[in-house]
Length: 636
Image 1 (cartoon, rainbow, N blue to C red):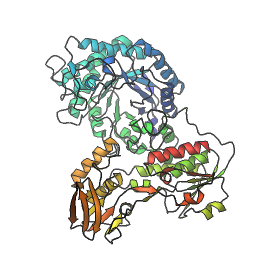
Image 2 (image 1 turned 90 degrees about the vertical axis):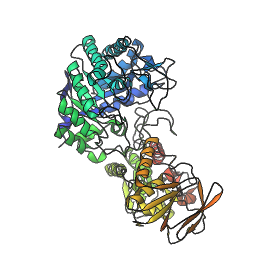
Image 3 (image 1 turned 60 degrees about the horizontal axis):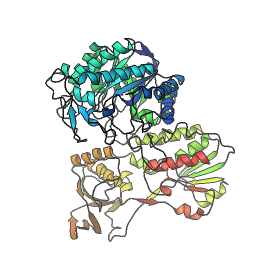
Image 4 (image 1 turned 30 degrees about the vertical axis):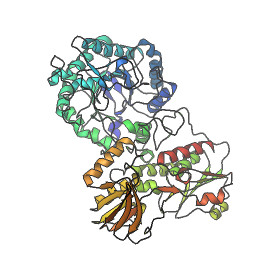
């Protein structure tokens, strides 16, 4: 079934060993002088080792005024050739091929990136980046084209196997291509052909300077996804123009560069397919392609020639190798959570891209799973994500590991987190961790609540408490009423509520997602909280998607309100010094957050063998618990 993913195919004169591509994504592993760091080499090199047939660098800026980020990697001067050459050497040594992505931010120039004025096809600023924009004159455009050509020459001198022209995601060339931004009246504006002219001239210039055999790919947004922007029909026509200008491949993305779990896996395939119908050169497709069966079916159907795995390649750099070897159950699946890959600055030491479910990502050459000097007997209390992550790493290091889980299945609250619509991929994380546990002979006992007697009987050298968290139940009059239940019980469907009027107390992420689930079962839902904004700690993009869905479902939010009493038909609360009475409700659901489950910790507080991780130590999100578990397992 997966053989076609590993059949060779050419882009221009370059033959690639398979159809799996790591596309351009900002790794944040360049320095303040815009050179790639050693960690960048480790990061990219690991994906080459993992079997990707083609890697495409993150955006390399071709001109200083085009910087999108203060620490963006660059290619606008010969001084960058040495660090770029080290990158290509690493990739080739590891069996991969690599293209340099050539980029100019245009009106998306990053704050603090440069003192030079931003430029664009028009003076219209981006709504998310309201800065002055100089409209390029007709006479100034050839110099911009030449910067792309010069950058391609540097890429060739640096050992790159080809280049990708970045004409997507709202950057300079996308601004020229887009009917929504390009308001020019000269030969670079107006018609579909004129808007594509600058990209076509760059293609021709690169072919002339680097030779016809040097591969050139163009990345385009396809459907830009906003009113007035390019439709997929306009983008497909422009791709045909790129082919006629000499492009060897096109790479069809979407106007929104990164999609959360609110977008279905493979959401962009219909757009990719439309371009594939138009052009005769290879088409690379991208858009939450995070499942091997989806990849295989897309190639088999002729939707695309190459599948670009963006965040999935961050999550699991060895996906190609695992698919080819039949280790599908070991694939770490990108959930679209954006918890870590999009926000490089966090509680961790260091800086740069990583992954919530795979914190080894971005730590290549820094973290290594090594055999322990002495095998120990280690107990893990709790089979949530933190407990399982610690268990399989310890097992791989040669320890004798036993996990005790009080429930009949693994996952803890992470499994509950997979219940809301569009979050089902979270369950795959637990499935992969369990596969690793089986591989490394970790023993898991279900329906066994670890206590001191059980742990002492096992004569363990080390004990890891990953017991998770308990719901916060504040002292509020009426909170023990028969109409009151816990959010976790709703998400487990131990309490079933349908076609009723429901109040959810708590507008954190759990409360909002519980409201989402309840609304999906025909309930009229009102969420009440002291917070000023719902789900304030959720990652920005998934939060925006979630709140949009709340509006579609008709969920009501009453924020800045403190609950004072729960009644049989509603609640009393205080808002802005006034007392409110909300009545006529059938059920009240508690989602006040979580507190660490420290019951077992209290029994072991002074025992040096005992280590507490995850929510058992401090109630937080999963990425912190998985990260703590990884660090602990590497040092025990």
